[in-house]
Amino acid sequence: FFDAKMIMNARSVHQLENDLRVSLVKNASELHNAINNSEFALYYQPIVNTKNNKVHGCEALLRWNHPIRGLVSPALFIPMAEQVHLMTVLGSWIIRRACADAITWPVRKDGEEISVSINISPIQFLEPDILFSSVKTALYETGITPSRVKLEITESADFAPSMKGYLQELKNLGCMIALDDFGTGFSSISHLVELPLDYVKVDRSLVKDLECNEPSKVARATRLARSVLGLGKALDLITIVEGIETPDGITAIQALGGNLIQGYVFSKPLQADLISEFLESF
Ligand code: C2E
Ligand code: MG
Ligand code: MG
Ligand code: MG
Image (cartoon, rainbow, N blue to C red; front, top):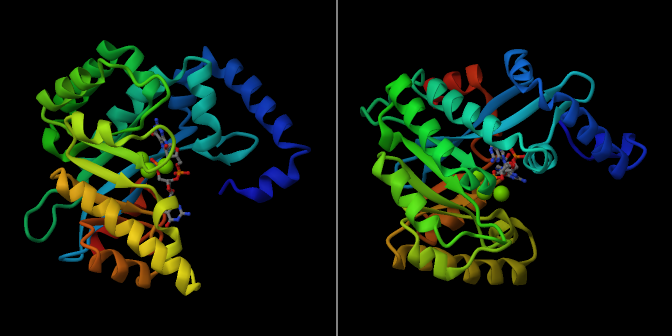
């Protein structure tokens, strides 16, 4: 797995980024090959309902298995794919692949179907027609129930005024919308109020202190989490808390009325075949 070790081994972060940029640009014309060569893969991380302890859905998380560098973090290569205009075509592949994987998942014992969350880059909204047709085609060709498909959007600096209409269009196809990374970057309460959202994902940075062992920090994080989850509830949104790593974290979120939890405490993101096994056994 890509992590700090790899950065330390590289002569510098800058050089690593540069290498990646060069290889990305080189690959730009050969993206379809890279896809066919299975250099890109979707991993899946379960999202669990804390009320009944059942898996609600899984988030698709992209990995790039670079022939030389090994697994590269999406935090590094997605911004680059955006810069070299690969994100639209890569994004379409992701939507298609995630729906195709999700229809192979086992149905829960109570008959509920498990949803699939797909991250949509802000860049994909620059070509909304391609985005809509990718979603439509994926729904049609895989036959997945549209309401199982949850599209995760993040806010960017130039969050378009037309976003509301775009999201409505995606909802008209039957998909659900989640606002990702709430509490970081450019997220604002007015977007939470105005956009046609179904879910809000509370960023790990807002809740990670719930799990630390400094009582004053925990108390503060508890008050913060209570407010943020209360805000979601006040707006009739289903709350998903990201990045819970310990059973104590689950207990805290349950006590605060959070609806769904995603984090290492249940599982790290897993390869497609392993997530099926996980879902069978959970
Ligand atoms: P995100 O959408 O907010 O995804 C959640 C990130 O938190 C994932 O990182 C996940 O592995 C990590 N995470 C989950 N549980 C825990 C935990 O308990 N502790 C900690 N420390 N981390 C946890 P990942 O997979 O490295 O992805 C990073 C970001 O890259 C994603 O953040 C998303 O913004 C972007 N990304 C990933 N896949 C895609 C994709 O297919 N398309 C687009 N456009 N962006 C993607
Ligand atoms: Mg996400
Ligand atoms: Mg997130
Ligand atoms: Mg995030």
